[in-house]
Image (cartoon, rainbow, N blue to C red; front, side, top):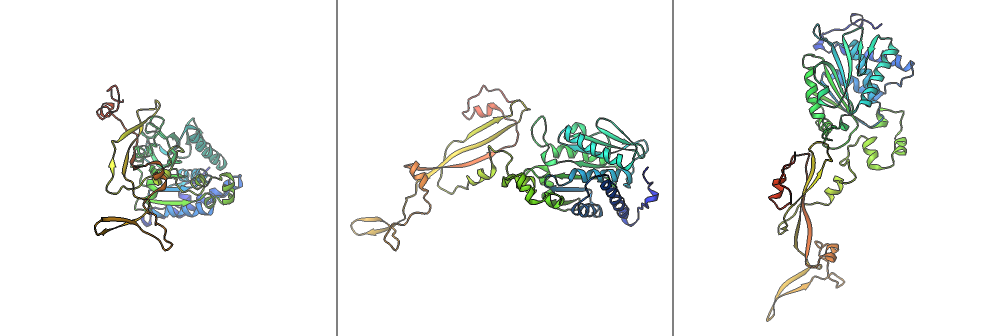
Length: 392
């Protein structure tokens, strides 16, 4: 049986935050019990960040940490501790929910399995069903769901955990639905003053919703935390992570928690960026071409790009000066160095001169779009063959 709230000395004094000390005492006690049962200890980094978040009074905690950093194990402990001893309350007739949203059913089930084992070690009576565990000692349910809008409405949350949010993917659109899912999930906390959300994830890209939240930093509404794998979980050394992943770019993303600008080996944004530059004046632009990559039957999303050629007259390979000569008019002569050799023009690219005898080519723009709807009739009006039917 778990101690009752009065026995733990809960208080709503001092701005409603004095309960944090008692909560942290219970968390540390829970951690010691789990260690005795064979669970790994909560690392010093996690313990410090847990205290920082709860003392902040913020309602959102955004965590960027490497793979195997102990996110799931630690956050399941927080969830159980909050369920048993948190100062939350819900109206009579309602049942509180601690929701875990994961990328797929297997991940969601794994969170539920960890919570169930923690409750077993603590000796807490609970009823487990396919996607939830209901406490018998307090009106609360641990519920897991996959990252879709359909599964995150219709209940009252006292805490929400968006597990590995940066890696969520919609089955329908193949896009990350985190913004929409969290937008639907947050109203479930509206009537619970102490409710909070935790957004833990290893990084994936530079522009997903989790990256956007993390890049906002500490604000009036949220706290952010960062750790490489070996910082959050000192049982794994940095050297070991390099043994596991020798590729520098993948290692940086998976273990050093540095987001990658690319998630596809086909179109690497780093390479695309290096191949492009701002065009100066004097370029002739060819007609643009729209390229489409359809989603192979998964919804109506496509990737698109707009590209065109641009060129100027080729610069001379060597630098010249022009001056006026009597009876001859304007004369061009090469600029010579101290050895009497012609000086090369720094604006000339030899590789292009070898390929193009009269003009230089360059790409003027390549705009990569998010999933969108396109009317084929629009493309047809610009010279792209089609049957005129709209994409649906």
